[in-house]
Image (cartoon, rainbow, N blue to C red; front, top):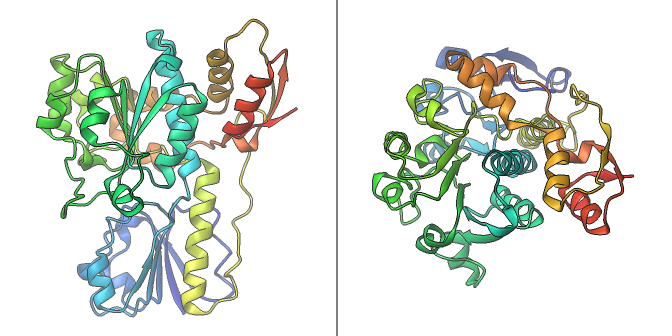
Length: 375
């Protein structure tokens, strides 16, 4: 039995070796010649899993350690009897942490009162739901847009995209990438839609790069027809539009979901998928050895005289400050892939114990709901 694994997937080495020949390779080196006698692939978004790679191979299952799966030609795989599985929700808490850091950083930069603002969440799946939760905890009003869910659930909780664009101060995108059908998201925010945004609105994209027409966004920012934007995902990445990068509030190299905890979840899901299909005794395996971050996992926050927004901001930014990732990319955009591949350890709030001094019950409750262990 032979399994080909992307060598950037963490916490994986040693798990499958007792049961199979395991080959670790960079995604770009995973070729048709390499996979022709393999039984399984464990991959990331950089490897296109299609007929060109897999035709004539013995691959039975593809597990991607990611939420996104547009790198897999699912129809072709299914026509050939190849089982594929992504890792839905694996990094949803990580993206929640990323957006929380963006929101509080933006609030500090522009002296914004988040409690008086409205966030429009476009795409309310595993990720979007958690983003909506943290925005609510930050005091924001939240509008939810998800046409597939709205049709399925017939719920009044959802609003149209037009209403989001009319009423939201900030719009954040959390949709899958699809090019066809009534819910197509390729260039969901094209030149026409971006042209309808107001001078006081911000646009965030941490879903898939082509959901936003990057040229149209660059033109809008140059003309100052919108207030600002944040991108973690890009058209053409890793070759990104450097002029656009310089115009953004925060520019990051596709790392919103890159917490160590989220990566461990993706690896766990992938191993379990392969184990289930190939009959290996690893269907309850869990990734271990998640390392500690640079900062201490236990810290103290003195809330004396601080507002709720200030207290939450200080706690969130202790765990993750998006400014550091933005500065790193802007300093060396040619290192986009290296910044992803060698990403420093980031832990989610649930890994941290927070000693809250002179805090109010409301502050404590919201910090707990964000995920912190309180003392």
